[in-house]
Length: 159
Image (tube, one colour):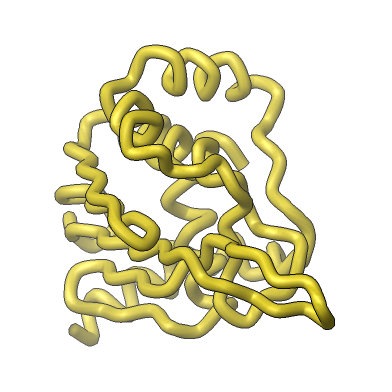
């Protein structure tokens, strides 16, 4: 456990200045790859079949705007980890599992739980997608700044 913690904090240190509140935008050089993935990928086809909305995903304590669009998130996870098996399960949101992601100190499974949550803002009620849980190996991230940094590392091919 200590080894996972120290390796992850060393790996995400370059992103520590990336505490922006705005939405992440896919880099120009990755846009065509994201579009191709969303057109041809079985995972994207499954998301459409399950009627998963392409909504902004935000962190639990983050207010609007969302951090990243859900379709872009899935595409960028794949583009950053193209040799890893990625599975998607849906129901009240969706779970993303990436098997054996390479980190500087070893390979670990990654699990992301994105749930749909009703938010009431003044008199307006709407459903949003929230990154609820992140597991890397046996390490659980439940604090927004650490989840943001780890997510940035997992999607570095696009952002």
